[in-house]
Length: 205
Image (cartoon, rainbow, N blue to C red; front, side, top):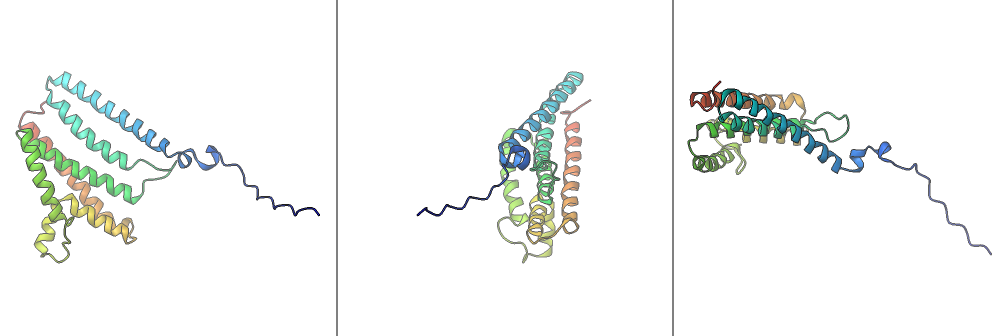
């Protein structure tokens, strides 16, 4: 008596890098592409800083280009597509503008500080203060109105509002104000920092 033959497993089409998408099959390609993009961007930034330094004979431009370029690279990396041809998600856009605003605060601190020690001490105090005002440590929902308004000077408060909104399923219309607020903060602080650096003759044409 012959044993019953086992059922043949269903035939599935062989998946290849072309059919599944190389990035989906090998996530390291995403990080490699991101690393190459950031490297190329920062190389261009530092080349521009070298040209500015040579033309103005002012080494302050090197530090300025490095600071601004690092912040821009951080923001751009947040927008890097994780799938071929995919557009950045709202979460990625929020992270990008949040990084830009936080970097702008750091550049302003560097422009105002006189010594590296001041950057370290004042920067630590500023991060702690921003965390409290922005609601990172305790909820500000029960705080007075003036406290919540004061917290709007921090990128923490705007970012927290945006992430909470996205977590609740809100879309672009609901977080457009948050994105705009962070973007305005970044641009204003950037321009103020450049003005201060020029006043201190660290940047001069």
